[in-house]
Image 1 (cartoon, each protein chain N blue to C red):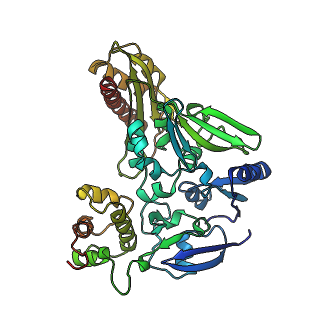
Image 2: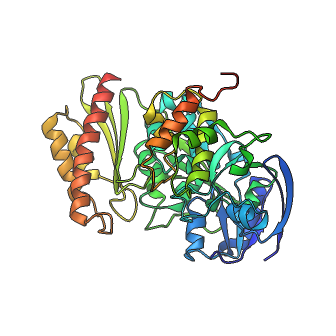
Image 3: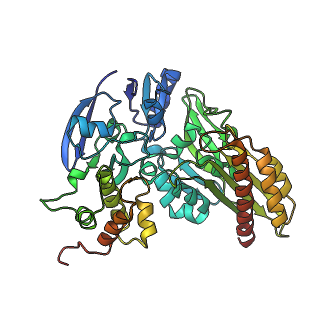
Length: 161
Length: 290
């Protein structure tokens, strides 16, 4: 096994790692760079707690080799907050109490953010539910999560409103 | 725990094929890896070399013309197919299939070539593509060849690919006039694999008679299979409720499903019957209106 040089961006900051090529993206983020907001759950691309954005797309960090994102831009939950201000989805999750144990929250926030970037005006709750289809939550029953995402889509957290 | 491997990243298809020629069965190809990494972690796949073709933009394309049909490059992601307006117009069943394939995250990274090469009988694209009479173009450093997708899977988790070959493209012929394809998978979790799946493609002639039928059963045998007895039952007839029901029964009989934690053999046959009846009816109604 020959180690590989990986240069990529996490939350707009450039990083360089020299790693075993079998390192998963979630391992590179958590174990090598300390971005522990991204969780590790089922390891079989089922639960979605490891969801991060790669070049703006939601992907599961447990099912991507870190070396495959060479040169790409990763956003983790730590990157949602900008200049000390929470992302609207974070504020909405707080206001709606859209979490309980919190384990799914990071992944859920990333899927919610990616979904709203692609679909700023979802037609209905069903479309929101489909947008978070790859994320399991065993506490909330999803209603509060859907409400939170909907409130962002409705413009409740828009600047100056 | 994934076993160590040597990571190789070819810069183009030619380099990838040269690597395959050199390392042969000591190498595996990874593209999106949405299936491969899971079974590597489970220790089911151990490889000395891993050739990463995810970044090969050369194979990342969709194109359509009315004579050749639709070409899908091997590294095209599921999400690209799902979002394609062109595919939505020409092959709406492919968009409907993609929307139910795993989850958004998996579709964002996983690719068509990777899915087909993984050769899981419960995979979504193969039954639909076989119903659409798709062909797979495979390449090696010695040249290219085309294989009808229905002949691509000799056995459970097996393909006809030689160790030095890889999938380059999927070719879907243009849909015949007055034809339609319907697909449904039965699963308990929305983003899960199908317990069984049925794809039905029908064409109707000017006299309102079923001219051609391709019925493909997913996860109903070790590989996706054509339900040929069921097809024969439909061809040359004006279809009605009685025939839809008979088609369902026949498909249930000619399937060869396993029993597992998700469903017994009998239950799978039952589901195949119901889905074949419904999908035949749906495809028939759509084809008659086309």
